[in-house]
Structures are given as C-alpha cells and as structure tokens.
Length: 208
Image (cartoon, rainbow, N blue to C red; front, side, top):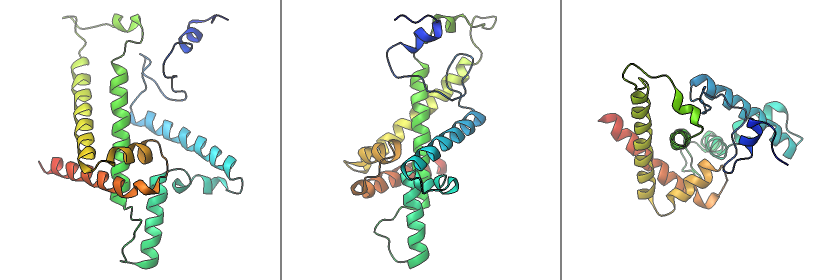
C-alpha cells in the first residue's frame, strides 16, 4: 500500500528511523540547544522510569528514577561511593570514581555531537538549498557552523585516539558500557584505562 502523504512517504525511506520526541530546527535537524537537551533528557528519564517499573513492578516511581536503576556508569559510581562509605580508604577492586563517571558522560555527549555533525552533511531535501543568503550569496551563519563542526570532529578524533592508545579493549569497553549502556564487568578495568586516557588528554588541553 502506497503512502498517501509526503510525511508518510518520508517515514518509509530506507535508513535509520527518525528519532521521535525531540526538538528540531526549521530544517528538520535535531536541536542541540540547552533547552532541547533538557527536554530530551526529561523524556528519556520518563521512558526509562516506565521501562524499569515494567521489569520490576516492586519499584516505586522515585526508586525507578534513580540513575543506578538505568545507567551502568551511574550504578557503578553509586556502588563505589557505598564501598568508600563502608570501608574508607580501603582499595576498591571494582573502583569507578566520580572522575570516571564524568569523563564517560562527557565522551557520550561528544559522541552524540559527532553523530549530529555527520548527519548534518547528508542532504535531507532540495528545499534546504533554497535558504535566503546575504548580498554576496553566502549564508552568514555557515562559517560559524563549519568552525563548530570542525572543533567537534577534532575533539572526537583526539578522544578516540586516546581510547585506542589506552589498550586493545579500550574502544570496545567504551562502546559497550558507555554508548550501549551494557554492564560487562570483565571490561571495567579496560574502561577505566580508556577514561583515564581521555581525562589526561583533557587536562593537557586545558593547561595549554
């Protein structure tokens, strides 16, 4: 059966399905503004809360909203804090510090920004090439956008290089645990090494 509307035809196109429930720019791209990110995170939290209560009906809404019930890195951080509270300075064999958590979150955001940059290069429709430009037929915002995108790509390449240099399983650990949010205990040490490598890179960059 053929789609009757233009929007329906677009949805039937091949490729990755369009992400629903997010704010978009007039051109149809996902908005990266602070308000848009906050709205997206709120919606994701509500969806995650519902899913957690479906899996474990005994959880209250407040319990299901706690990060450790949905995010692997948040769970590991809470477990580490509990270990420190109980045993003090005793070495934790399952260590996962606040710095590890924050570095993982930052890389996940950088990863999402990088995917947005790649997606922005794809032609979405012919109407996107009919925008109004300045008197010299150039878009005054294109240069700023290009610089921002170039900075994101460079930051992602540097972070990826740091991960690869951290060990043979560093990238697998980051992709599996941070990006895919899968709890794989045997990759915890590799993840820590990868995150430490990224943190050193950021420290060097900030000191420059």
